[in-house]
Amino acid sequence: MLAWTAWDTGADPARFARGVPWIVDFLRRMLPPDLRVLPAALVGAIKTLEIALLGTAVAAVLALPLGFLSARNVAAPPVFHPARAALNFFRSVDTLVYALVFVAAVGLGPFPGVLAVVAYTTTSLAKLYSEAIEGIERGPVDAITATGATRLQVLRFGVLPQVLPLFLSYVLYRLETNIRAATVLGFVGAGGIGFYLQTYLRMIDYPAASTVLLVTVLMVMVVDAVSSRLRARLV
Amino acid sequence: MIEVAGLRVVLPPDVVAVDGVDLVIRPGEFVVILGRSGAGKTTFLRALNRLVEPTAGDVRVGGRAVTGADPATLRALRRQIGMVFQQFNLVRRASVLDNVLAGRLGWAPALPTLFGHFPAEDRRIALECLAQVGLADFAQRRADTLSGGEQQRVAIARALAQSPAVILADEPTASLDPALTGSIMDLLKTIRARRGLTLVVSQHQLETALAYATRVVGFRQGRVVFDGPPAALSPAVASTIYAEEPRRSPQGGHP
Image 1 (cartoon, each protein chain N blue to C red):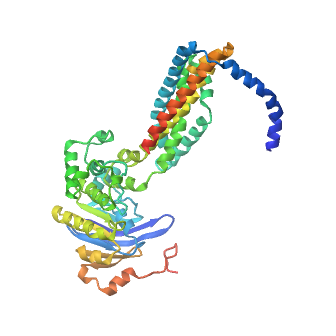
Image 2 (image 1 turned 120 degrees about the vertical axis):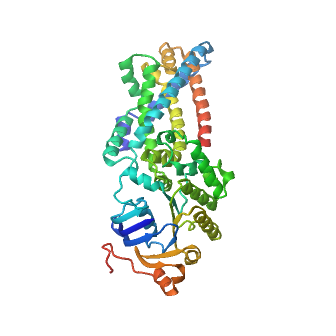
């Protein structure tokens, strides 16, 4: 089957080898980076950060009720099954595809990018939340129930303290991946640093494009480092 | 204080855990439910506040029906029944004080508690209960940094914070170092004396039952096989309680 896929996709090592000089040429034309576009690249990077931050934050909250509704040990089966199915459906669409939809709906700019991040992240976080909820210890839940607490109080005092550190860790992880996803949102007109990258590539201004790429790489590395340090402290 | 009539609990798929128990527990008694593991002690205790739903029979606490009670009534009843568990069942990541405050959930106004707010009076009660179990200095520590014995004391403080009329303790010393058994049982005994509580404690250790109980109820295979003062528990009766039994078939008959 792999052989067939290789044939069907036209995968050919020789053809790749013939392409290598072009990659080298491409890289050589990117150097040295044109630092005059650094201010523009930084503005784009900040926009991308904003898109990812706002989108992730909104999604982190929206995913809360969804997460509880799609947890087997909290929601009743008539609620749980449709909720799970809806999550799986919406999660199968990537952020970039949502961005295309929202650009068409609300026009160009960072705003459709935020909406796209919210749409994808809400469902993917809800799924992670629900799995965390399903993995909790039964004991504390029993103990809180036995005090005469209401159902909501049992969730708040028996379930939430067990899952909150996990939730925060998932949100940070999503923030990392969303910053990476948001860097390409500009390609479809949804704002951020990707817009500059695409513009310079189209103008065949490779030194400028390489500056944008460098800024992107640095931004992603910094956010990853900060976020993974925070996550390590949560668990 | 507790009246149980014809209590029967069948756990899924079809294990008869409690098989027709009639029992009246009077206020202030220190009842030890004695039996081997698997005798139905845990299920019996959990049926008293309906953490496990009884299959048949009646449970009344303080004269009010627990079985068949609507959710609000059930919560009001649970509020006066403190519960202590074999595995402590603390919220490990929460502070000791927050764990004890959970005991006030049935009393404090519900909405503010959802935002973590408890009235000053409830906080005072929680701290007082913590002091009563000798852990006043541990209030801000995370629960999972405490030793097993300390965690069980926190759990007892949580039950006390309910200002309960009854405390049910399910094998409260079984997961602890045997050397700590006495200190936990002493603590329960002191609390009962000071607050005039009714105590129902399940135990699998005969010596502990005899040392602390005012009344021993022997369980075997979900049935009461002895009920009387510790002094009346003869070696012959004890060996009946602890006797090996063939497992019942799923239908509940004897193979």
